[in-house]
Every structure is written in structure tokens, then in C-alpha cells.
Image (cartoon, rainbow, N blue to C red; front, top):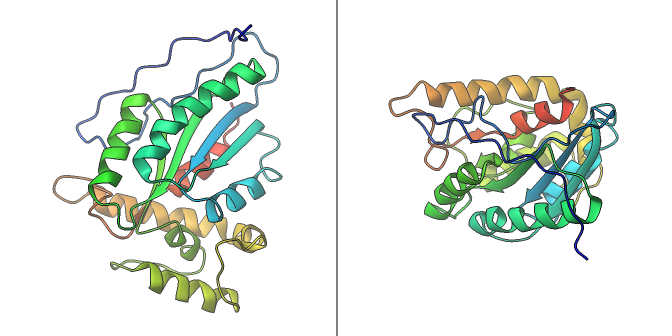
Length: 228
């Protein structure tokens, strides 16, 4: 018999003039009712199978005080598929555990996906999910721990900068990366906010598919640290 999950209806996402602007928007998780443990359960579904899962799995030890569970899944799929599969993963995990996720985040890069990237953000917004996007890639977020990035940049440039900053060749499966980045986390947050706000101030507002460099990883990290 299929497990019965006690759910509230998914909150309705607030409408904004700009679909890329997620400030104040509800997430795609559903708050569990009647539990004493106020720590949250968060699901992160990633485009990559190495870089992102390694990074977010390493977060677990840092955010034990605020998170009851942090589930990370790396798919190796394009952004639209990540969003589509995130719904199924959420439903499956909730059915198995008997609990519900407070937030669901999709993590993916612009890279060469073009319109697929933009549509994936729209799909996630419609589903009520949060999106931690990066243009051109998550390596931008990593680089912001070491330096400002103000001009359009390529993935090759980002990886070269990381190799120089780390004093070793940058590798996507580097298990030690999180520990080296974490002490510089606050400055990376500030730099990411500056990038977001600089694009929001432009005519038409934030459009991550066309704005390079930009990342929303800092907002996901803030969410992991938030204690409700």
C-alpha cells in the first residue's frame, strides 16, 4: 500500500513583473504540520553529477543546526529535464519518508543551453520550485570566493582562475573544494548580490539567460543557513 503523506496544498507563487526575479517567492516544498523539530527538509536537484553534488553534500556538516535533512540528487541532464524530474523525485522521497520538503531547489547552468535554460526557469517558477542558476556556470560562484567578476566570462576563463587561486588544477570532483571555499563565503555572497542587483537595475530587469556573469547560488546558501 502506498504511504500516505500529510500535505498542505502547495503555496501559490507570487506573481512578479519579471519571471526571473524570485525575491519573496514561495518555494515548492510543503511545510509539515505538528512536528516539534523546526529544522527544515530541503531537496536539491542538480544538473551535474559531480561538481554540484560534491559541493552541496559537503554543506551538510555546516548546516546541521538549521537542516533536519538535505537531500542532494545529481542527474546529468539538461535544465528542463532537471525541473521535470525534480517533481517526481520530491514526490517519491516524500512518499518513502512520510514527511514533506520545506523547499525544493533546482540547480543548473546556462552553458550552451540557450532557450532551454530560460524555459527551465519558467517551468520551475510555475511548479513553485526555487532555482539556483548560474551564467555561464557554477564555477562563477566558486570564483567569487577569490575575486570579483564584473565582465562577461567563459567557462574556460573561470576554470583557469580557479586553478590559479587553488594552486592546483581545478577538478569538478574535488572533494576538498568546499572546505577551501567556506572561509571566504561571506565575501562571495556580497559579490553575487552586487551582480544580481546590477542586472536588475538594467532596462527590462534580470534576465539570467542573457546576463553574464550572474549566479543565484548565494540565495540557496542563505536558505540553507536560515533557521525558522
